Length: 180
Image (cartoon, rainbow, N blue to C red; front, top):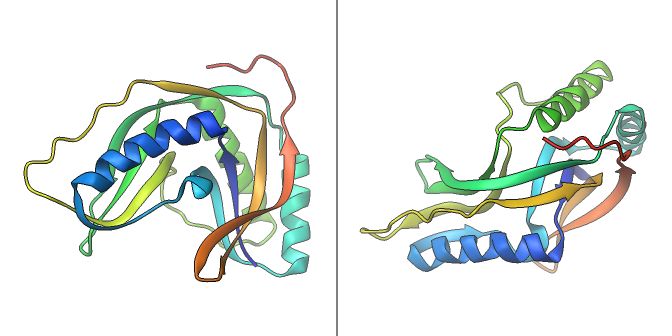
């Protein structure tokens, strides 16, 4: 299985992000854009994992302190790539989110997982290999806040040619007012 740990959004948040995505898509002459169902915030990408590794990931998730918190999407940007840029919606700085991601990464690394070493940049990918038409004005984002009540272990697979994410496991947050 090709696994990652993520935060998923309500239909309302997905619709708001999809509106931003569609404004980029309308200005593009090329790109692969994320479907509404696949919009999420990745915490840790794990890659190909077997059953034993999947059980270890679930154990790490169970042992990780997860407090309910509020995150805010607030900006649009892109990572420059030679074959077309990767566009994203970024989040307001949030210590609880960064600490959660760092804790998961440390625990998984301790269990032997080989993870990316680059600095975590929380974002929602909305398009890959995107080439924009000349004269495009990057959209501004009205802040969009949402509550995080769980994290999910997801399997990424192609079903009938369509990239599909399926929940494998979930960890619910404790409710302690961890709003930032």
